[in-house]
Length: 289
Image (cartoon, rainbow, N blue to C red; front, top):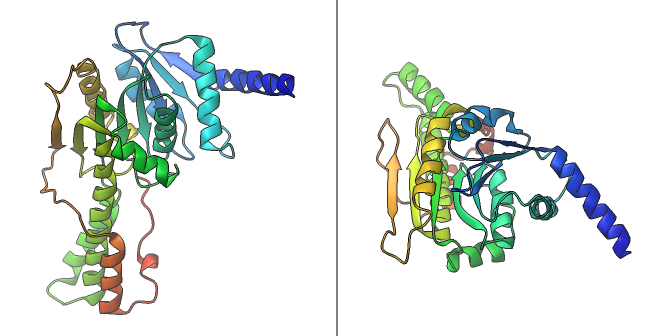
C-alpha cells in the first residue's frame, strides 16, 4: 500500500513538473515567485506580467489542467514537486481570482516558507474551510510579512451600461434603473468588504483599487501587479514592527472609498422589498473582464 502511494505521488509530481515553467534570472537574492491563475484560465494570460517580472525575479508558472482535482490535493502535489526540485526555500505568492484558494491553502501548509503575497481579485470565491480562514485572520498568519491586495472593478461594464441607460432616459423617473443602482452599489460594497477582509492576513499590508479595470487585472493591468510584487520584495526583510504599513492606494481615476459594514444580503433584501421584483439576479451576470 505504501509502495502504491509513493508511486502515485511520484507520478503526480512528474505530472505537475510537466505543467510548470520557470522563467527569469536565477536570482537567489529574492524568493521564487509562484503564480496561481484563476478558474478555467491558464498561465497564457500571465505572459506580459511574467516577462516584466523575469528581469528581476525567477517565476514559476503552474497550469492546473485538471479542474476535477481538489485544491488541497493539488497544493500538496505542488509542494512535493517544490521539495524535490529544491528551487527555493521561500516563496512570494501571486494569485488571481480562484487562484486565491490555492494560495491560501499553500499558506496554510507552509506559512514559514511564504515570504509575501500579492492577491489580485481574490477573496470572493475562497473555498477553504471557514474555520481555517478565520484562524488565518485571527492569527494574522503572515505576521509582518508583506501583503498586497489588489481590487479591480468586476462591475465596470455593468456600471457603463447603467450610465448609458440613465443618460438615455433623460429626466424621466425609472424605478428599474433606481433598483439597478441600489443593486450595483450593494454588490460593489460587498466586493470591497471581501477584498479588504484579506488584509487581516498581515500587519504589513497594502490595498490597491483600480476602479477602471475589470476582473482581469493580470492581463489588463500587469504593470500594477508588477508594482505590487516590487513592493513586497522591497519589504521582505522588515524587522520587528518598525516598518509596519497600512496603505490604501487607488489607481486613477480616483474615487472615494468607503468602508462596508452592511452585508449585501440586507441591501438586496431592501431593494427587493421596495420594487418587488421576482428575480433581481436576472438583471446581472458576473463580469469576467
